[in-house]
Length: 366
Image (tube, rainbow, N blue to C red):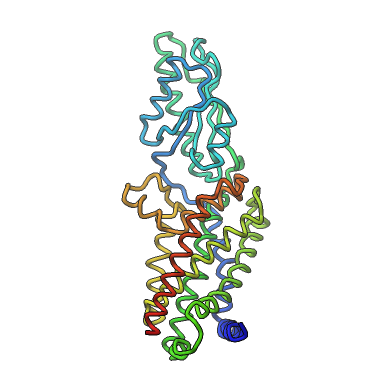
């Protein structure tokens, strides 16, 4: 243990003696969270929706089928209570819900239709409610045409959940958190270790009596602690500067972020065992980590819009699971049981990456 602590102390000295690296690690989160605090509008397709039909007549069935036939929506399920709808929203199973009141089709003027939307992604919610409203009004107008009664005055009632003010930061802050932690943990870790390989100090470590697992832990711990500081900084900026609430458990938010940072660190360690130069480490990190986060994690482009192959590839992107979980906890107030799937996947990724890193270090030792 004494040898491990000495090695750990050396790693801290190695990080903080370079003021430029230290400034980058601490300043980048502040810059990115401010710059990317607002969302970009994107077209939405195949958004899952549910229906709470209290009327169950031909009119409501026609409207439901019309919405399901649209390219913008995908029918998920019919429910029997508002509580079931709320559960589906909290679990992230649906993006929109349509509520038909009792005896909806019995009146020639119809009753009000209620549209619920998950506004934790505000631009997406705006587009989806507009699509649903347009489809419903078109269908009602078609049904009322034989009566000669105009349908222009019929407007569905829209209710935006979790983000009624439609703040863009609610959507992008979790995504930026995922990008920042990958940038700090993976890229800085891989570049730092490869720099030691270039200077020859890594060879000394590899022939030392320390076990590879201790070398890996000593390399990862300083960056993990710095990442924890970045996590706290991001959360403070998001809450007090951008007004993003933390509805769920703060402990759960910190746990998820720390677990994701550990996954990112393991990725950086694995990259460092493959790359032979700092430039190649940066290139591999950018191509293998940053681009998938931006394109395949759901940060900017909804996963439902992607082809099946890309949706399948997105499952191996750690940021996808982190962004979904952190958004559900921060914005929707989800608890531990709601994000157990994401936690399990991130834990599995951590174990696999640590095992791969240890194996690569053993190969170099042999």
